[in-house]
Image (tube, rainbow, N blue to C red; front, side, top):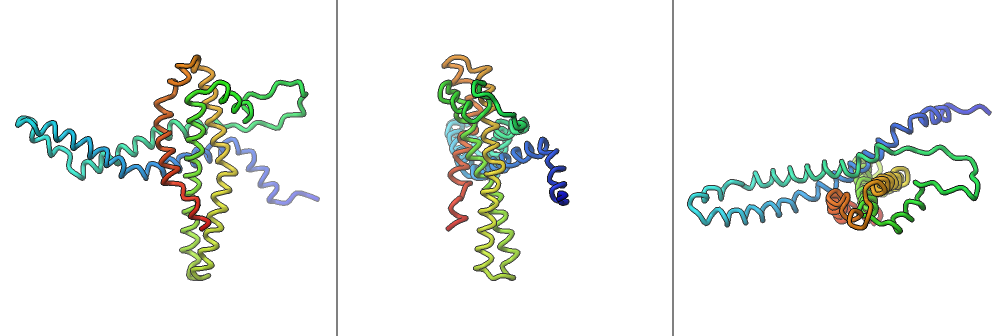
Length: 252
């Protein structure tokens, strides 16, 4: 039986997985980072207000610097908070999303001898090194990627849910349209995590493992190397988990 046109198309597109798979991982992480950064505007505005209030108290003590009290208006503080959120987002993209471009799929290997050494980049080997030689990068980067990937998948799922509900509400009625929209959104969420989410985590784990093996020699370096970037994405990942991942909204 000759293969159908869809099989031929699938094989043809399979030749380009080396290109669209890394781009898919990059897009999922970038969407998740953006969703998390969107929740930080108000928090950063509070921080900017506190800093501005402290600055006003200092400069307001002296006649020479008193005019600086009105240096930052509410509009300027809001703009500054948004600029800080954007800068945070771009730096987090550089830390988490750019390594995804190095994702490569290994070709299936022939049957190996039981005496052969395990591959160095398998899940098991990577996790063993995380436990035996823990570093800041090995632990924080993959966990942050996982939380951000879930936030990105939730963002896409919400878009699917809203689009389907608004398009089919008049045709099927609100109840049926809501059920169908939730079902398709849940399918999109699970599909993205199944096809892209775990690969994004694996790629960042591989990147963190390689960097740790090369640079993090000794206890002090294991903690310090990559610490600024890890701290940056850890806070963003926390925001992604708390405010940008409404998992229960798709089932309740």
